[in-house]
Structures are given as structure tokens and as C-alpha cells.
Length: 477
Ligand code: ADP
Ligand code: MG
Image 1 (spheres, rainbow, N blue to C red):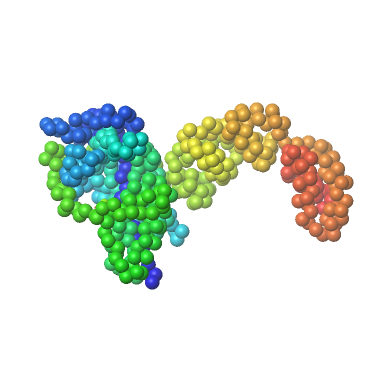
Image 2: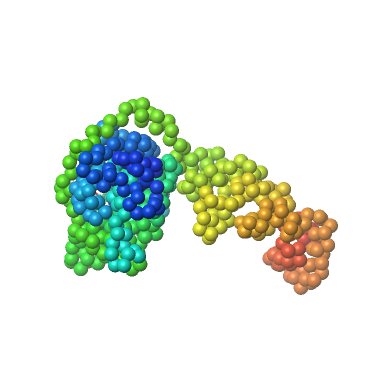
């Protein structure tokens, strides 16, 4: 049987506000456990939550960026459950009327662009955290995170493969960072994803029973967890068994999903409007002001890069997937004399490779756009060849100085003196009688051999164009 995979994602994004969603306590990450667990975050008797308008502003910003419906009136509801990291017994969330309604986002797939529907995005407070490490077999509870503002972005079940799910996740990750509504740090839990996965026979309209996978905290694990889960479900159904609707946990060490608990239904949570918070009503001016403040979005920027810099869509997509990378490229191309396409090749090639290898973010890069621009200009003004430039780049990366300093101290300046190159060409030809004969016999390929020998003698510093010209001249062409 041919099976089709169906995936819907729920993504929790921590909003970058200084204080919590319903109190003035700090949201800073990494403080001593429970030093930020204020009375409101843990709902001590008699306290009252007060909405942090900045959280609403960031949620609306997201909604507008995906062209979603913004609900002028939304309602906070209590979602009742007990868990050690939620000792107050309920989470304040939104249920029937979320702040952001239906929208969509476009993703890239191997078969071209595809639109993924977004069902809703609601505001809610984060819970605390259970700690199991270094506690001598006991568990600790840290309530610092309790009350940190979140939006939960719920997608329609529109994705059909793990690859599409990752592509969607990356798009959203890039978008929230672009908008500056979240730092998107997955290790610190600012951007978390649950994947709902089911399968159905190809051609069947009705969805199969889904499992919800929790605890997937990297792009790579999302892909692995979904693929594992799809295989598990196929095995079950082909064995005449059934998939049960449940919550499963992804174990990255074992690369498998495990049953955690049977899935609760919405009615289990006894949702009801929170009596301590009035409905949130947003006026037109508030929304208009946010619309005004929206930055250029990744997709718009990609189109502009294609048009303005004549880049291909894929390169433009890669450059604009990260706002800081796109900013770096834009500064670089404005400062250097080389074409935007060459600048883009450097940013996506040598520069990205070096960043990946050293595991540093573009925001922490030590080579400024201006310094890289100087290096590229040295190719343009023929001081060095493109190949030598890579060597200079590595030295710059290792902190050995500016492009000009390195070219000078390592003696990398290109040899452009025609007489000098001519004498080396003559020398090489004199030493390569056999190859010269082969060439005269019509074997054009030995040109490569001659060039190689010349570069060897000049440590790669002879100007390649001149070498070629002089060589062909000497060989009588
Ligand atoms: P809950 O709130 O109980 O988790 P929802 O109906 O809100 O349930 O759905 C949550 C997520 O599950 C959504 O992203 C939705 O797209 C996805 N989903 C729903 N049904 C299926 C299915 N049969 N297969 C895969 N994903 C599904
Ligand atoms: Mg859910």
C-alpha cells in the first residue's frame, strides 16, 4: 500500500518582552532558579494578572506579517491541569477567540513553492520547568519561566513530508527573528515544536489517527522524529493494528518516539474565560501603528535581491533567510567594486562555510563587511587572483590582519609584470619538450599542465589571464 504522510505543527514562540505577560517580573534567561517566580506567575491568593501590552503588540506583528486576520477582541481562558511545573493548576491561554486568526505562509519544496495554512496563533503564558540533572535522583522545579509570554502558532495539517515540515519550521523561525519578536533560541527553549503526525492511504480524503510528538528541539530532530513516527505507523497499519491517538516523546539519543500519555481532549481542560482578565480589545490605531512598523519581510527582500542585484532565486532565498546575513551582504555589496553576484558567492560560500565550521553566528563575525569588501576589491584591481583571495580570507579569519597587511606580509601580490611571466613561461616550455610535442599534435589538454607548472613556480601568484595569453602566444596560436 502507498501511504501519504500528514503533518500539522504547533510551535511555541517565546516573545521577547522584558517582563512577563501578566506581571512586571523579569523574563531574562539563565537566572538562579525561582528568583523570577513572582507572586503573579505562581498565582498566590489575592494577586491579579495585568496584561503586558507589549506581548499583544508582538503577537499582532506576527499576525500582520502572515496576512492573518487579527481579532480586535480576544479572550483569555484558563486551561486547567496540574503538573509539577504548573503548581497554580491552570495556564492562562486563549481558547475560543485567539488574538490571531487564519493566515498562511509560503514554503519552498522540491516541487516549488507551497502555501501552508495557519489555523491560529494565540497568546498564553509559559509554564515552569522541571529539572532532572545533577539532583541526586530528585527532580527540581524552576518557576522562573512561568509567565513568560508565548504565542502558540498552530498550522493546518497541510504538510506531506518531514522535509516540508522542516521547511515550514525554518520559514517561521526566520520570520520571528526578522520581526524581532523572539530570539528563536532553540537550545534555550525560545522556539519549541510539537509535531502531529498521521498517515493515510494515498487518495483517501479522510485523515488518519494522529500522534503528537513532543520535545523536539532542533530542526534535525524534527525531521528524524517525524520519519521515525511515520515508519512506526506504517508498520502498525500494515500489521492490521491501529494507531492510537496519544502524546509521544522523542528521544534523540535512541532516535525513537515513546508513548507518554493518552491524548487529552479539549474538554478535559475545562476551559473557561479567565474572570481576572477582561477581554482584550485592540483599536485601529494600535494595529495601524504596528503595520507601519513592519520591516521588509524575508520574502519581499528575496524578490528585491533578485531584481536589484540580479541574483538567482535560490541564492537570494538563502541570503534573506537570516536578517543579519542579508544585512551583511547588503553592506558588502555597497562597499565593494565586485558585482553583487560575486559578493553573494563569497557570503554563501567561504564566509558561510567558515561560520559553520567555527559555529559562530553572523552577528558575532570578526571580519566586517568593510574588511571583506577590501579583500574582494583586491581581486577586482588584480592585486591577487580569486584563488589567492581564499588563502587571504583564511588568514583574515584567523585574525592575522587586514587583507592588505596579509597580502604584503605573505608576499601574495600577483605577478603582473609581462616580462617576468614571459620568462617563466619560456622556462616551463623548455623543460616540457614532450608535452610541447603533444600539444603540437593537437592535444589541447596539456595547456592545463603548462599552467599548473607556471603556477607552481610562482606559488600561484602569476596573473592567470596573462599566463594564458602569453602561453598561447608562445605556442604559436
Ligand atoms: P489539539 O489542540 O488537541 O492538539 P488541534 O485540533 O488543535 O488539536 O490540532 C493540533 C494540530 O494537529 C494542528 O496543527 C493540526 O493541523 C494537527 N492535526 C490535526 N489532525 C491531524 C491529523 N489527522 N494528522 C496530522 N496532523 C493533524
Ligand atoms: Mg496540541
